[in-house]
Image 1: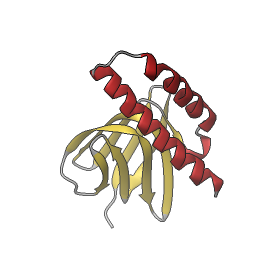
Image 2: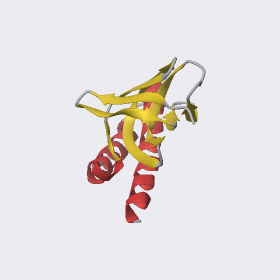
Image 3: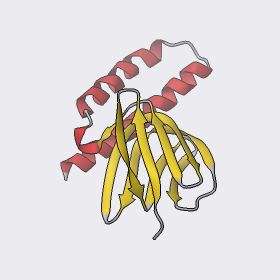
Length: 136
């Protein structure tokens, strides 16, 4: 199987660099998979799990949003925040969810409120996935 270069970076660190057979991304409009030879693409990313499959390895990373760009033979992922799933601070995410749940009812109706509710839902889905995954 053909491979391609992947880099996952966030403001704090270079989280992953290496070759991959496949990368699954939480796209803003839905999940997508990238293989070698994929058409060039730029997509926004929602909070979720990035899965990098390479040489029999399967690595997962938690991101809290960002952007991904694939061209030629490399995938560059610029995440707002990223960490390997086993290093992700679930308690911090839970605290952020609770804070947002307290704040949302006090906000006036607006497009900004709609975006905040959507983000809250994405955080809750991510929290549920990470909590269930870490239980195994």
